[in-house]
Amino acid sequence: MRYHSHFNTAIRIIEQYDGKIPFAIYLKQFFAADKKYGSKDRKSIAAFCYNYFRVGKAAPNLATAERMALSAFILDPRSAEMPDLFVADWQANVSAPVQDKLALAGITTSDIFPWAGSLSEGIDATAFTLSFLQQPDLFLRVRPGKATITEEKLEAAGIAYTKVDSNTIALSNATNITNILEPDREVVIQDLNSQQVLDFFSSPAFEKGEKGYSVWDCCAASGGKSILIHDILHGNIRLTVSDIRESILANLRKRFDMANIRMLEAFTADLSRETGRAYPAADITICDAPCTGSGTWSRTPEQLYYFDPAQIDIYAQRQQAIVATVIPAVPINGYFVYITCSAFKKENEELVNFIKEKFHLQLLQMELLKGYDKKADTMFVAVFRKPLA
Image 1: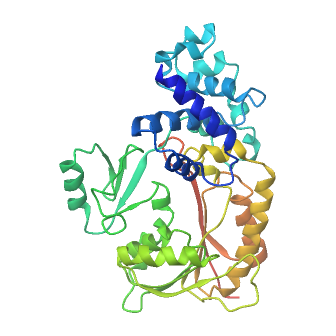
Image 2 (image 1 turned 60 degrees about the vertical axis):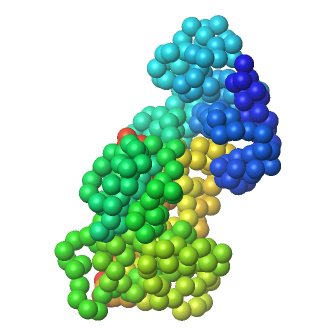
Image 3 (image 1 turned 90 degrees about the vertical axis):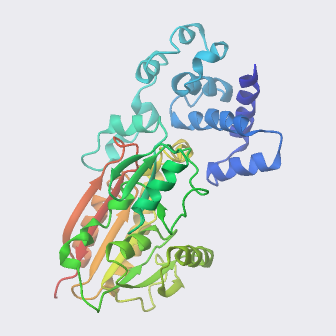
């Protein structure tokens, strides 16, 4: 049967992949190099691979083929169609709920994710771990004035969607909207909780006059937070962005052109090392810090599979170095926003304590935005203000 070929191809891919680049990119390169796979083939092979990663650190001693079969039994909705991949006990339970299948396979949530004690306060470790076993939704943030045209285009294309709120739409993760909507001009592809990390500035208190706000997005990456603050403050900003590589800034310029956003300045800097230069004294400094990305592992389960817990300390040290470089540039009464897509307390609450103790900033908001119960990412945000000395 055809799934046997897909199963064996998936094994070959897994055994060749080393986790050094995002798996989505690796998979795209693999299929580009071998054109014989049609769209249904690619989808089937990818499902085997992603399920293999979704069971995380469980069953580490199994051979690749055995672990592939295990993950397919637990997670693949096609499992009833391919019973010969499974041992007898599993064949009789292919239609059981996922948690029953885990029990039958002798797997606990702590096998999948062994670091529950390192999670931020308030996270349900079991629910968080189980979220890795399913693909999250695709979320769109509708840009100001584009709600009607966005919904009309989705409906005309026959795309099923859920309206989360007036600005947010959820779709199946497999939905391709690039030929239907204008990304960045009409909508921004942005996770549900990522859309909420700057809600502090939605308050009427930030409806400012002609002067507007200077904003420095210091770890700008793909620029999603820059576009978000632009829309929240009705475009009344003077935007500076920075990141570690010029290639990132080149992509940002193209994206901002699509989004009709003008930048005041863009520059490269390694903020974890370059401490001796002048940085922008902005009214609002946004630090979407490099992190483990553990709040997003349901989207990128290969990162869970390859994760080394020593990375938590490595990232925490880098985060401390970055904020120690950036915060001195924040002017009196200026706002500093610290954001991660991590679920680990060392990158979240402990970084907040570091900032309060070392720089004596006033903490105005600290929030863990849980996504594991919403088919979304888990995010963390803390908003500070620099008080008078």
